[in-house]
Length: 457
Ligand code: ARG
Image (tube, rainbow, N blue to C red; front, side):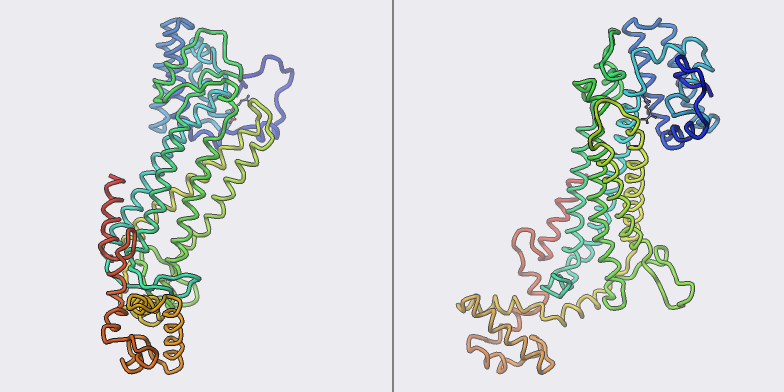
């Protein structure tokens, strides 16, 4: 396929250099955006009298035909083409003749690729946001069903205080709520049109940048042509947002893996989301969760790729920037896959409240409540803390728990203890009493669920 830029060259590009230079295998996925962007550009050129009306109409009709054929599969991007922009332009000229050659007036591939990428990623942000909301919704549904399910809450992966499974899942939902918010922020900054920046300096043609910006659903044209073609902040920002989502998912994945180990036994994954071992017949492995945890590495890597790509890059366009697409596409694809798999996996987990309660009953996780009991009866907290510590040590020595000590044993440590201590250390009571705003009490969990449901619509 003949290059767009043959005029000043005496030789064709070396085959290996040609293959090295080409980006069609990566950027052809932006064909829809490339065609849509070109349609807006052609309409503007005609409206501004830069090309004849008839040519404008022929270009638009030709591009619409190309898009329809690419959607139906009748037309596939040629692997021979340098990139998707060259392919569409060449195909247009093949179809409509000379009018096609006018399309690239007052435009460069530099503003074209910046435009295509913004349009494409804008759409992917919407998909990411939907998928994140669906996972939030799955988390909230499971949280609601388990708003009263007592389990140990951990610090240092040591049993700390009684919480509910609902509260733990709501913590993940809150993280994803922030992710959705971050994506919306990223979309807002991304949503300015670079089209009309041309190669780097703008153009002498009387173009109407506001018109193309509006046709393409942008909030405004970007304010500086050099920045318009050089800026890839929007890709970095999206990659960072994806990296944060991946971080959140990897924490959830790690907990899922722990919870479905025999040691915890808190949940069981559905067979549809588990795999077996080729040698150990008893195994049921949480591969999906492990992969979600593992894929976080490449998502972080994509962010590092993009940041490194831009570091020290002089203005304006440099071919280095062609490398941005593989990284950002991979980042978005990977995180979308993870989000989309996690929601149904979560919806189908079996929760063992018995195992959760058993773990909660074994870890002295009501010790804080025992200390608080003494404090509320006038013992200074530091003293109450120490006394309770001694009680726990005593329990460990004689194989008891705070629940199985007798009142006499309690009184041996402090005369302040009365029979109501047993109520104060009851796990359901411990949980139900944590009514501080955002606390773990079932009512608080239900309030969080209602707020988040409202926010995601
Ligand atoms: N394929 C190129 C890219 O992705 C398109 C822009 C080419 N511009 C240029 N001046 N060579 O960056």
